[in-house]
Image 1 (cartoon, rainbow, N blue to C red):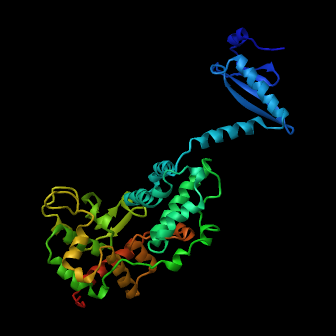
Image 2 (tube, rainbow, N blue to C red):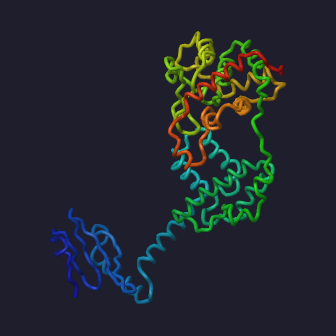
Image 3 (cartoon, helix red, strand yellow):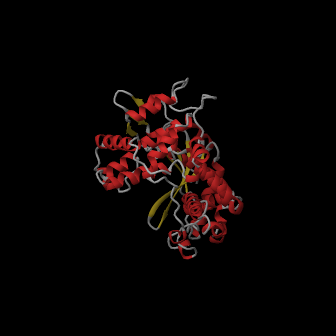
Amino acid sequence: MAYLTYLKIKSLKTPGRYPDGGGLYLNISKNGKGSWTFRYNRFGRSKELGLGSIRDVPLAEARKQRDRTRVMIFKGLDPIIEKQKKLLQLKRSLNQTFEWAANEYINTMEIQWKNIKHRMQWRSTLKTYAYPIIGETPLNQIATQHILKILKPIWSTKTETATRVRQRIEAILNWSITLQYSDPPNPATWKGHLENLLPKPNKIRTVKHHPALFYEKLPCFFTNLQNIKAPSSYALQFLILTAARTSEVRGATWDEIDEKNKLWIIPGSRMKTGREHVIPLTDNSFKTLLWSNKRNPTNNLFYNYETGKPLSEMAMLSILRKSFASLGIVTHGFRSTFRDWAEEMQTFSHRAIEECLSHSIKNKTEAAYLRTNLLKSRRIIMDEWSQFIFGGNSEKF
């Protein structure tokens, strides 16, 4: 015998649970909304299955769902588990592709990637190497063979790129597995899986360091660089004197310069490490800034005199290729030159040198105990670096 009728349901206003028999209940919430639930026992445990709201499911339909569910229990099935299976089948039936998953993953995660170039590399490497093979492949159909087809052609010739592509595919497929668009194991996993099918990267990778100038030749090089009166030359001089990165110099503004305390304070948003970096400036560093900014109408420390815009990414490298091509060096190599000089001096602590280069300390336990950026020590290092550059005792290049 039924406990509920359409008229009774309309009259219910008090929050509570109202039975209809056979495990079916109508729940009225505090805000007056009603929903159906079916209560049952499974291995001595009480469970509750939602059947929908009274707005979407009328009384007759709720009773039919109850009866179907009771038959399911009689057959030894758990209604909640069966419902989850149906939802999963529905999700899988959408046949979401790898390219779709990659875009979803990148859009979600890229907020934590500070470096714009890093974001671009994620998209470009997947577009170049992964999408042609598995871009349109449904996530639950991607297998080890697909991953090998992507990686094998570049594993030995572009090992570093191949390694990053594998890591990115693995991350995207882990995201897919977590959201149940596909099942484990992840076919792009290295440990215990692909390591059995591909050579270890460190066994085949040829480590390529940025071509750098021997520090003994730097004073002579710097003198020749000073003879080039161009904004890119001033920027390169400043980069060498501060041991900074190209992107840090290109984006530098007067707002970051503390003239009173002779500091260049680079905000964390512009740093590769994501943390603020303070560089002590020498008298020679300031002179370079003043030479560069004689006609500066903008806030940029270095800019294109013709357009007024910040220097292009290739500006400093172009000077090296045009005026110092025989050396075969690149802009980033001057950080190596600085490091070699600092290590050879044997009077500076390793940590102070690392702070000058704004290198992150990989040991988290050690990093937790570091309470200072060694500014005083680093000022001494940068002063001696400047004196060395302008000292004149140099080998010719």
